[in-house]
Amino acid sequence: PKGKSKKHTDNDAKILVFRTPLKTVVKKTITSNNTDWAGKCLCQCRYENLIKGSTQPNPHDPSLVHDKYWAQRRRLFKKFDDGIQLDAEGWYSVTPEVVADHVASRFGDASKQLVRYPANQNARGGKGTRRGGQKKKPPKSMVILDAFCGCGGNGIAFAKLSSSAISLVVCVDLDRSKLRKAAHNASIYGIPPNRMIFVEANSVAVMERCYRDGNLIMDPPPREELSEYPPREIYDDFTIGGIDLLAEYAQHIDAVFIDPPWGGIDYGAMGKDGYDLARDMKIRGCERGCVGFPPTPEIDGVRLLKIAAAATSTRFVAYDLPRNANKRSLAHAALEAGYEGNSKLEEHYLNGRLKTVTAYFGQDFRNLLDLKKYHGKGN
Image (cartoon, rainbow, N blue to C red; front, top):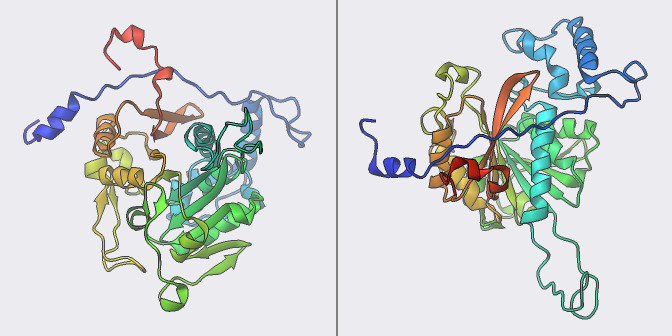
C-alpha cells in the first residue's frame, strides 16, 4: 500500500498464517450436587438455566448494563448469584469464566515447560537428588502479572490453578474500585489471600519501569518516605495497595497476561479482521505522572506487546484481543517485540459464536501443525 515503510514490507515476507482445527470440548454431561441436573446433558442444563435467568428482570439502568449482558451474567461468573460484583465496564469487558479457565489452563501447561528448577540444583546424586544426596526441590511455580485486571475474571481463573503451577497472581489496575470488586469476587471463589495481590497503578508503567527480564528493577521508595502512595488496605482478606507491594510480594514475574481496553463496545464496527493494533488500540499513559513514575505517553497495541515481553523472565505472554483483530497487525507486533518462529492464536466460541481470541507468545507451537501438507511453506 502507498506510504508503507520498507521495514513493514520486509516483515510481510516473514509472516505466514496457518489454520489448524483444534477444539476444546466441554463435557457433555453434568456432575453436580443439584439433583435437578443429574443425568441431563449440558445443553439442556444451559437452556433451563437461561430460562430461569430470563425471568429475572435486569435491575440495572439499561444504558449502563445492557439486557443482553444481564442475561449472560452466569456465563461471566458461574457463582454470580453468590454476590459477584461488576461495574458498568466490567459487564462488557470481563472474560466469561469458561474462557478464562481455558486460558488459565494454558498458563498451567506452560509453567511445566518454562519455569526452571531452583538455582544451585544438581542431579549428581542421581535422579530426584542433588549434590550431597539430598532430595531435589520441585520446580518453581509461576508468578503471573495480570495487567488490566478489571473485576478479576482472568486473575481468579489463574489463582484457581494449583499452587504448584501458579504461586502468585499480581493484579494491576488504575481503578481502586475495580480492584476491590476483584478482591471481593476472588473471596467468593475461595481463593487464598496469599495467592493474589492487587496493585493500584498504571499497568504499562509497571511493566516498563518496574520489571526487566522478570526481575524487579525499580526499588520503590519506602511507604513512609512517599505519602502519595495509594493507601494500603485489607479488603475481604486480600491486600490492595500501590507499587510498594511489588518489592514486598513480587520480586520477579515469569509471565504476563494482557487484556487491555479495546476502545469500548464499538470495536466490531471495524469489520471482519479490521481491528488494527497500531491504529485502533490506544492504551492510556500517565499524562501527569503516576505515583512513583514520571509522565508516560499513550501507546498502541504493538508497543504494548513489546513492553510486556521485555518484562518477563520467560517471554511467555498471552494477549486477549477482539474477535476481529487483524492477524497481520498481530504478527507485526510479534516481530516488533522480538519474537521469532511461531505463535498461537486461539478463537473462543460460546454457543457457536466467536467471542474473543487469545494470542500466545514465547513457546514453540510447531507440533500443532502438519507442516508436510504445506509443502515446505512454513518452518
